[in-house]
Every structure is written in structure tokens, then in C-alpha cells.
Image (tube, rainbow, N blue to C red):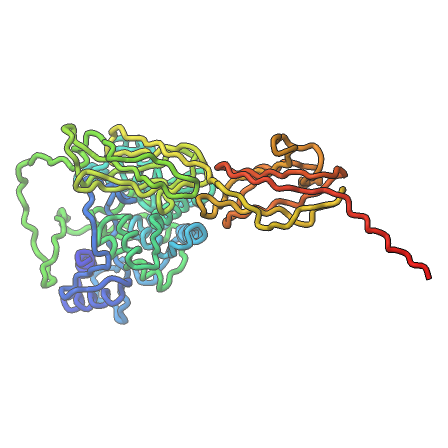
Length: 574
């Protein structure tokens, strides 16, 4: 964070005294969880920042560069500057109308679908500011799609992560390497599973702010993080771009936007100017909505050398040219040494609908010689639309870094309500190696016992209706059997389960006679209450049979008999 603030001080040519005051003011105005040590360096509650491997594909952005501009300081007297300041506090608080609308709609959607996440729209605004300067000052059309592409640098390992092409150039126009795309700067391999349709047009477009904002919100809310908790908030932000400086910058803008913001017209938002890679921004071409203003040429224009870091005293230094050194051999990243995946003792993957699988998928990354490779990202993906199973936390994709033994273990699988087989596919992130597929099976919920909840005799007169409805309770291994499928049929006899054609019956919605009820389900307490029963004119004893998935069966006796004729009162004579 000091490096960020140093850039701002250099631009304004502040004195040492003013700079010290500004750092103190900034420290006092930062977001919760950010503190300052004795040297003015900022630290955060995110106590463990992992070091990603060379591919960087464990984050939304592939750890691409970002804007380092900080919010304005709340100082009562403007600090002296040379030239025109980049923006005033009021201007910086303005968010382009369509972009602001997208952030709020995404937060509202997540508030309904994942209320435990507690995602504030201001967090999306903070990330949008740091990633793309609010879509390059709101350079979007009426539907929220960027007018000109917003692309990060080529992730070819030359100063950045090394991520080979994963989308054939479909999103980023590069069929050799990946690049971060759109206003929220998703890399294609992350967008492939995290992309969302935020504006309901049937497409998932990383260049559309509505789609990108909703995808960013879902990304931040995975793993059941509660963003009202500082530790979870830090973890979520670091998962977006794995850098403590990035975390501190986002937290600064989050706190700034929480203090108040306002809507400005699209295309008029304030553009940041400083980036972590020293470039002028993540875009392929200048934004048409923000034309540059010609400056007065200097009498003797000379090339500007890269700006050095200022000495501790706040002055400037003269850069000393460094002669190029010898070209050294490139050390392959752990990911680049992986030759294949091996199973690491995954057991049989079976579970009953709604339950957690007892076994977890585990694989090992190995070199061609069979040596385990640590610190490699392995992606686990639940494949297909025929299942509603997820990993713990509700996601269908999980990325895990291999441990010192080269093993990556997927989060626990949770079965949905859809039964049948599905595939869990494992791949090495950043490589095109053949993956491993695991078949998992979900079986229907079962019951092994059915009992009536009442012992009242079920009787009726011909042509009447039974006073009591049949209610049963289902259990499995002594526990409540909820959401178990059941069928109720009025049968001919104990030895003949054929549907009866006379005696008691149910009625459908149109009042027609029905003697078989299918697609019944026990409730959360394992209870099943059948509709009312009616009797035709046939008298006798009849049977109702209820069966469930898992083999539980209960036969209930029904009696239809004419009402007893009361005996006449004896007469007496006087």
C-alpha cells in the first residue's frame, strides 16, 4: 500500500511534511481490519496469503494487474499540488448509472439466493473500480455491454502469470494465451464456470456489466463465506486477486463507497491512472467517451525514464541504467512438470438424495517419472445437466492446490434430489492433459418402516365418506425418512395387489373416482397424509396398500357397512 501512496505523492509533488500527514489521514480512514505499523506500512487481518504457482488460474482474474489509485483523503485543507488534480472527492464518488444499477441488481439477486453471504453492492463497486475503473468510466451501451473491449495484458509469463489459451480466443481474441476480460476482469477459464446471465438475455457475456457483476458476486459468495465477517471478506477478496496490496486497495474503496456515492451519466466516470504493472490501463483501445486533451508540447521533449521508488526521505532519485544481464534458463513451474493425473485412493461414490457422500475424490499430480508434484492447481468439475449435486458450499466447480505429496482432495460432494449417475471430472489448471473422470451415483431416499399415526378404525356407510384421513409415518433405520416417494393403492385382496374396481376410492381434482395415488412424498417429518376416502354402494372389508422407495409397505383395513338399525322401543300397556 505504501508503494501505491508513494505514486500519488509523486504526482502531487507534496512536501515531506504534507506526505506524512496524508499517510496518517489515510490510515485513519481505511476499512475495518486494516492497521498501520510504525513505519506507515499497512497490514490486514488476512494473515495468510498463499503464493500461487506460475499459471495464476486460482483467482477470478488470473492475478492480473489492477488500478492502484486510492480514494481521496478527507483533509479539511487541500494539499498543495502542481498541475491539475486527477479528481475531486465528489467526482470520485460518482459511479456511472448503468454500472451502478448492475452492482445493485447483482447484490439484490445474491441477497435472495445466498442471504448468508451478506454481499454489499459497495464491494462490487470497489472491485469494479480497481479492476476496470468502473468499466472505463461507464463506457457501456444501454444494455450494459462495453463499447470497446477491456482486456488485461497477455498472460504469457513475461512479468505476469503464464496461462495458455483456454477458450480458443472466444472471449479475449487471443488463441495463444489468456487475458482478463471485461469490466470485472475475468480470465476465460474462470468465466467458463463462473459466468452468469445477469440481464436475462440468455447469454453469459463477460463484457456485459450486468453479467459480470452477478458473476463476481457469486464468485465472492462461494464456499459459504459471510462477507459481514472480516476474515471471510478478506478471503473472498484475495480469492479474486491474490495480493495483499490488492486487498488493501479494495478495502479502501469499499469503505469510501460506504460513506456515500452518487450516480453520474454513463461515460462520464472518473478514470484511474495508476496500475500495478505500470501500464495505462486494461483496454485495447482508447475509450471513445473519454477523448484525450492535447497538451502543450515541452520546448525540448525527451523520453521519460521509468519512475523510481522515492527514498525514505520523500525526495527523488536519478535512475541508473542497468546493463542487460545474460539470459538465464527458465525454470519450469510445478504445473509445467506435471505429466499425468493418478487416482489417490478415491472410494465408491454413492449417496442417498440429499445426503453428503461418504467418500471424496482425490487425485495426485505426477511427473513422467511418477514423482509427485506439489503446489499444482487441480480443478474438480461436476459435469452435466442431469444432476443437481454440488460440492460443499453449493458450487459445481472447485479448485484445490496439491499438497506436499502431490495430492488434491475435492470438497465433499452433496447429493441433490435428482437420482442417477453423474461425472466428477478432474483436470490440471493451465495444462491440456487428459483428466480423470469419476462416476458418482445418487439413489432415491428410502424408508424401511411405515406405521399409522392413529389406531382409530376406518369405517364408512355406503355412499358416504370416511371421517378420518389416513396418515402414516416413514422411517429408515429408525430415523425420520423425509421426502421419500410413496404410492397408495386400493387393492383387491392381500394376495392380489391389482387395483380394485369397487369399494372405497379417492377423488381427483375434477371429482372423478381414483383408486391409485402415485407421486406421493413424505414431508420433512416423514409424515404422509392421504386425501379423503369415499365409499360407493358396495359393503364389505377393503384394503389400502401404501408402499415407499426402499420397500416399506403398510396395508390398512377399511370397512364399509350399513348403519345399524336401532331396535324399536318396547311398548307398554296400562
